[in-house]
Structure formats: C-alpha cells, structure tokens
Amino acid sequence: MMGTKDKVRLQEIAHKYLQGKLSQEDKMEFDHWFNQIPVEPIEVSPLYAKQEDAHRKAILKRIKKEVETSRPRTLKMWRNIAAAMVIILTIGIGLLFLKHQQISPKSTAKIMQDGTMPGKNMATLTLSGGRKLVLSNTIDEKLLKETGVEVQKAENGQLIYKQIDHQHTDHLIYNTLTTSRGQQYQLILPDGSHIWLNSGSSVKFPVSFAGLKERKVFITGEVYFEVSKDQQRPFRVISEGQQVTVHGTHFNINGYQDEPESKTTLLEGSVDINGTLLKPNQQAVLGKDELKVIPVDAENVIAWKDGYFRFSDESLESIMRKVSRWYDVDVVFEDPSLKNTEFGGVMTKYTKVSKVLEMLELTGEVSFDLKGKKIIVKNKN
Figure 1: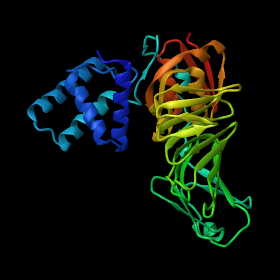
Figure 2 (figure 1 turned 180 degrees about the vertical axis):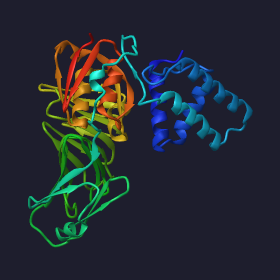
Figure 3 (figure 1 turned 120 degrees about the horizontal axis):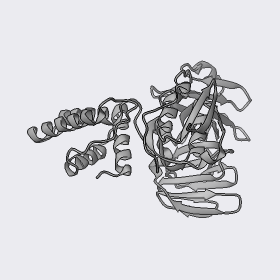
Figure 4 (figure 1 turned 90 degrees about the horizontal axis):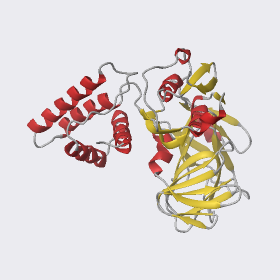
C-alpha cells in the first residue's frame, strides 16, 4: 500500500513535469515506483473528479499496457506516462493528505466568489541615495546605468546585477531589494551568488564586492541562497539575532517577525550559525533563549521558491501565515483551537486562494469565509 509520503512525492514529480523541470533522477524514481506498485490507484479528490475510482484505474491500466508492449522505454513513452500521471495526480490543483481526517466532498459556497489571485514576480529596488524603483515587467535600464549599476532581467524574472562604476569611494554603497506581501523575486549578486526572496522580505547588499575582505548582506523575512565559492572572502548573512557564515553552499533562512522562531535550513555544504555548525538536511531553530539543531526534510522548506506549498504535519496557523503573505490577505481565527490542526500535502501556489481553502476544507472540521482580503477560519458546521 502506498504511503502518504510517497503520494506527496509523486505529486511533486507531477508538478515538476508541468513546469518542465523533471530531472533524470525524477524519471528514474517514477520508473521504480511504477515497477514496484502494480495498478494501485492514487487518490483524486471528489471535489475535482466524478467516478474518480474508475477513472484513475483505467488510466493506470492503459499506462501499464503501454509499458509492457514498448520495450525498451523511450523518452517519448516516458512523456506519455508522465502526462497520464499528471492527469491522475493534479486534477484541479492536487491533493492535501490530511492528518487524522476523513475527506469529504462538501465545500463552502462562501469562498467560491474569489478575485484573490496568487502573488507576482515583483520587487522594489531602493538605491543607495534612497530612490525607489519598482521592478516588474519593465525596467528602466538607462536610469539604472546612470546610478553605476546595470540590471538585466532574464525571461524567468531573475535580476542580474553588474557593477559598472569603478570610481574609488571611501565607503560601501548598498542597494536594497524588497518584496511586499504577494510578491517574490530573484537576483544574482556581483559575485555570482543567487538569491530568492519570498513575499514580505528584503536583502541589503553592496553593489560591488571588489576590494572587500568579506561578502556581507543583511536580510529580513525569508530568503534562499546559493552562494558562490570564494575561499578568500567568506559570505555572511546578517538577520535579527543571528549571523550565518558560509564559503559556498545552499541554504534557506526564515526570519519573519510574525514567526515564533528563526529557522536556518541547510541543503548542501556547511554553514555556521552563531558558532553552531550545520550539516545538510539540518535546521537551526533560534528561539528567544536558545539555538537548537533538528533534522528536517529540506525540500519541504524550500518548496516556496519552486512554486508550490508543501506541508508535513504542519499546523494550520503556520500554513495560514504562508497563505496570508503569498495572497496578501489577512487571516482571523474564530476558534483559536483550530490553529493547532495539522496537515500534510502538496499543492501549487499558482491558483486562486479559494482553491487552497477548498482543499483545506476537505478535512470536514474547518471552514472558511472569504470576505474581500480577509479570510475567517471557523469550525465546520
């Protein structure tokens, strides 16, 4: 019998397929699953499919027939299998696998009228002199060059910074990139380090690292880093209450003011947080009085940057904070006890907020009213 973790992972692979980001390892993982588990149906929410049991079994049988009659497997055939898998796994926006709850097909009509769209690829660049420039689909490159900085925008929306003013100065010149709620953005620093900003975040950075003994940036909110290696100049990230020192690594810092703790998660390499070393798939949790290190599934932590929500036994209160930032909405709990209800699963971020709320309602225990930019969380009637 396929476990919840396996189902969530397969939905994740389906999501990557839709984005065109499947790796060879992903394809091999699906191949292994397919060979080990013969024609086991994968759950499809009754909210999105009628007679889903017969529907999914028919598709899986067809896939199996294609596999048995087409050896060796080719890339074209893999795409056919993956396409069928996507139909099974991602009808609508996908599934939440809900802890200790029975899925119900009923949903609340009060959230169907919804004009709340997901966040966008936008940010505000604050230059050293205080001038602010909104970065969205258009960039005034001529204006930016006048400031001594060249900014290019790639097709995927990332910003590439290049220092072009080499005049000597006696002090560091900093720029700051900021995202509001409902925004996210990417940039590449002058040393080639790649940074992703989640909603409601900022990074303050030198426009050039030339002549510096260390590379130091300052952040708020949640930021993911892929730091370029430089043995001569360590990279340091300063956020409230902590300093992270690295030489070249991938890690995520979640330091929102409304979160009870600051969390630094390492994916590869090594980092030092206030004198404590982390290994891959470890997380440093900084509370008011102590710093502790715990093992984590790093893929859960960084799912936001790849375009989806991924939860593992996560409280509804924590989930709704993420929803609030991404959709730029306010959340009110009528019953505070609902904050501790736990969920696990995966779904795309690029859908209306009503779809996310509908999936959460399938617990049969929680319901929502969506009134403009406010979400009211209530007990299920």
